[in-house]
Image (cartoon, rainbow, N blue to C red; front, side, top):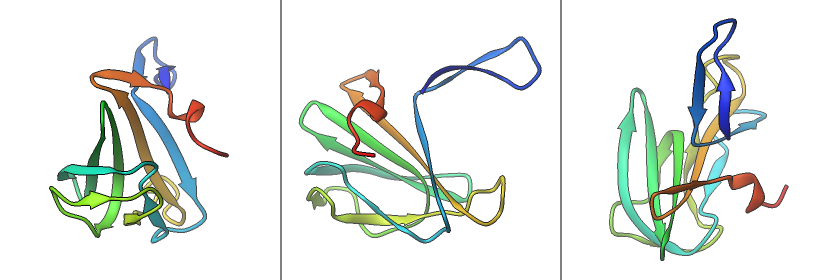
Length: 114
């Protein structure tokens, strides 16, 4: 989360969320709060889900499949999809997770149980 140096360059990038690595792809991804699915969309070859939780939003990206649709009500810990393969190592899974209060990015690590 936050700013990071891009490789050996002097460029700085901004990561609006966190990356959660899993031992293998295909692990269930679950909603962290009750809410409503406001968008299901593709980014390249993977899928993403955005859920509204009152004034908060969560975004789950790099999914191989999605089990919810726009407008669906979801409960905390409900499966919303499966994590896709980590393209960097080709074996594990990798989920990109964002948390926002309206349009302000929040550090998800402060909200999630380890």
